[in-house]
Image (cartoon, rainbow, N blue to C red; front, side, top):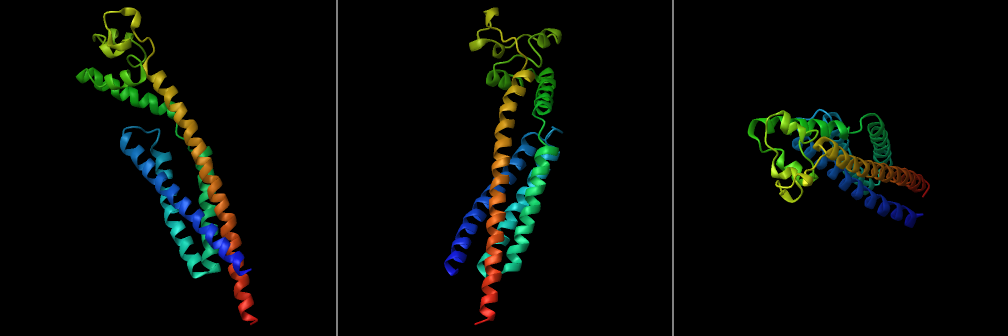
Length: 219
């Protein structure tokens, strides 16, 4: 039984470290997203939730490791309950507050296009990166009285009209962000699974600590 307790402690430590790493990555990724898209309303609430859950997950795993070191069944049970609540909160966030990447793309390109009308240069980076032209298409430049930039052409060859990109950047960026949405969903569920496994082993560890205490009373 002693070996079993040590084994559970070792597995719990490994799982705690993994959860701590995921919590730190979640915290940093959501903080970066808020800074990078500070003008977007599509990501504010999901990112704030992500920062909160990531911070609590990071801090809670430290508490869980301390409970395992002290071999305290009460601390380990508290840790297990807190982790369960965090897992429930994360599942709710996945279903109730997902990032609307279509809205994010629309907000981002609309903001950049409005800046384009002022300084005539900000759309270039998106047009080169995503092979698109204008907000909704090349007609945006024509209707705004702006010349079509070389970035709107394949290879920057503005002398060949047939090489003009016909798709607007909102559509292309939305499709690119949709791929990011799938990756985010997969990573979210991986974290939920990791937390769930951690809960199971921490609960088993708490029971083991409790049983060890009972045995000591009868010695």
